[in-house]
Image (cartoon, rainbow, N blue to C red; front, side, top):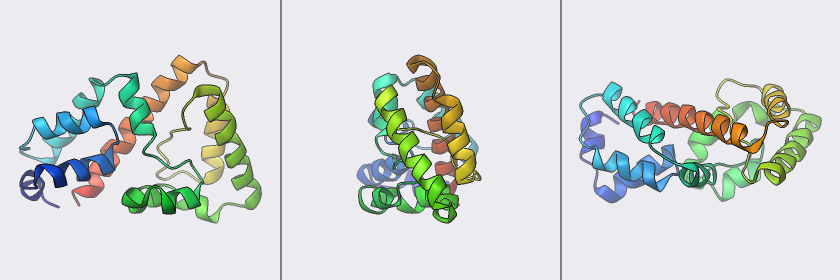
Length: 167
């Protein structure tokens, strides 16, 4: 999609495309209000600033739009609108050993029980083993620290998805 095509989308279609990049309604509405964009660079800068103006409730809403790392069934069912984006991000999980997948599943459950939201990591380019290691390293964090890290990871994911949308 080109910048011109993005700018010319109906409000509904623009909202849907932005929500595939980030599930925060506040962020999507801010992006909608900032149209039109002059360039990809401007789009990314505005996206970054819009995310920096969000709050915990917005972060949690965005997190809810992600499948759990390694949860292929969830990816296929609940997240069909972002399946292509998230599936590519988690491509290495599909080739992970059953032992690694089991550890990711247990780690995800433990993480969500502890923090109240799913484990968020910018998975692009990471193996399942690397993501498991990151999850295990972050698990001892307190909730506020982890929430901030997860929000930073969400921002990375959003920017990557915007770039994918525009290619």
